[in-house]
Length: 301
Length: 288
Ligand SMILES: Nc1nc2c(ncn2[C@@H]2O[C@H](COP(=O)(O)OP(=O)(O)OP(=O)(O)O)[C@@H](O)[C@H]2O)c(=O)[nH]1
Ligand SMILES: Nc1nc2c(ncn2[C@@H]2O[C@H](COP(=O)(O)OP(=O)(O)OP(=O)(O)O)[C@@H](O)[C@H]2O)c(=O)[nH]1
Ligand SMILES: [Mg+2]
Ligand SMILES: [Mg+2]
Image 1 (cartoon, chains in turn brown, red):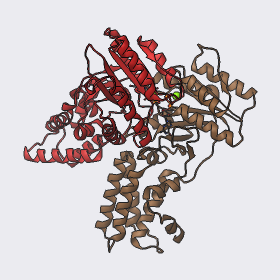
Image 2 (tube, rainbow over the protein chains, first blue to last red; image 1 turned 30 degrees about the vertical axis):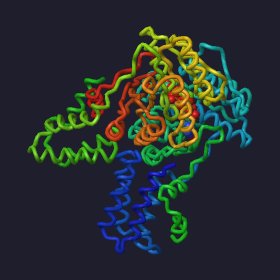
Image 3 (spheres, chains in turn purple, brown; image 1 turned 120 degrees about the vertical axis):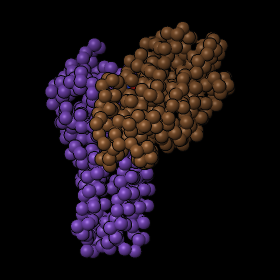
Image 4 (cartoon, rainbow over the protein chains, first blue to last red; image 1 turned 180 degrees about the vertical axis):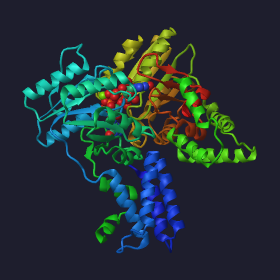
């Protein structure tokens, strides 16, 4: 996970520490390396620009920590800014109806299975249902997952629209006094007006406590635009990044909180039902910087 | 859509002087198209040099230069799906959710329409309801299907499928496999085993090993292509989800570095949403 960024960052920061004097040229070199690393990691172009500007401004304004060497101080500034754009704290889920949305194939259905498993282990009463009337065998997929987890799957007669299914599922969930209803939707393009309208209607009908945007961590430069369109249409309350078990570069991880203000809540780290983890921004930042001793810098400051 | 965006591409250049600002905007545009930093820097450098060498002052002239450059990078990667009257086996592979199963449905539909005796092979025995998903595509396309229980050995399904294909005279076999990240060695091994099973029935030249890449994915696609190529000798790429706003620019460095032919493009979730790869049109879209 994020190895590429880690490799590039730590190489360039180590070089910084090795240089005798932290001149402006050294700083510029480091920032240029970081820029290339971030862009290669698919971090949004504008986000990279503003991130570097902040780091540069802070470093050059000598807002440097007295307790650290100049080089360490720069490392620390990068760490702080990185943590900031990742979001500072991990956030919990509000009880209620949790709506899952996103592009095709990002991992919505699988993630519902995983989250149901996680919430069930925390002793919540969880139920799941699917409004995906489009993808072949999509409902069956969620039903199978629910059986594996051991939570009820609400199914209804065939031929209902997505919105009608959503309504019925919520009715039943309320009647049964469950804590969470995890509601699946069909994958869709952000530019598909008809299907985006359908999501708005589902939202209106179910009054979700959370709208979670499920995104593939390997997504490229369009990632942020897509997320933004979903956010503008629905008001997202959180992001889940999937497929972090590969060598995903973390582009969206570093862009989405910064640009949209929506926190990342979980990461998917595999295909199995247990493969979901809460998102800890500071740990991820430390991992990206790849410097084992960041913690000691933090303590010194 | 195509013409409108071609116009937009023109707008970036129209009536402008060749200056630093233009190069910066070009850089942003190329990076945003997922072409990658390395290649982008190289392209912009080359353009800069050419602009000086040929004393180009008007941006319009640069536009053609850039287009030509990009086309030259990818034109040798124009490829076509193997076709003949006898049996051809198409093995689909790729990371999770890239569009393998859906693309099989579309391609099977095309083969059936061409009158080819077509068989689907449900070798994704892992993901929940993957078999049933493929079954729906078999019905929609009019192809036959071979399947076993969820959890069976995928190579065993492939074996059974090819046995049936050979003994019953099928002309097209399309094999669906479970999505797998290229970083997972055991899963890559499993793919090799599937490939070897196929080669017990047909020779390498009658197998298409197709890597399905999702156009929304960024620079990661390059490592996917590298690793899968190394592991099972990919014979072609299918790039899906081009109906969204992603341009799939990663295929440019992939073409350049790995020279894997691009054989088809996916532009939707319907049976007919499959198109050939045309380098010139692709470049127009890329820069739009
Ligand atoms: N390696 C890995 N695979 C994942 C992860 N999350 C989901 N997947 C896989 O990604 C593929 C797509 O997952 P789905 O849950 O079907 O995705 P979806 O968003 O529901 O897809 P649509 O309903 O078609 O839009 C499946 O093969 C999943 O097993 C993850 O964290 N890691
Ligand atoms: N918009 C669009 N969606 C597509 C395209 N191709 C596939 N999809 C959708 O992407 C999602 C995943 O497609 P699948 O065919 O299930 O992908 P897969 O590679 O078989 O997935 P796994 O078997 O889970 O690894 C589905 O919702 C498809 O409908 C395409 O060209 N455009
Ligand atoms: Mg789904
Ligand atoms: Mg599949």
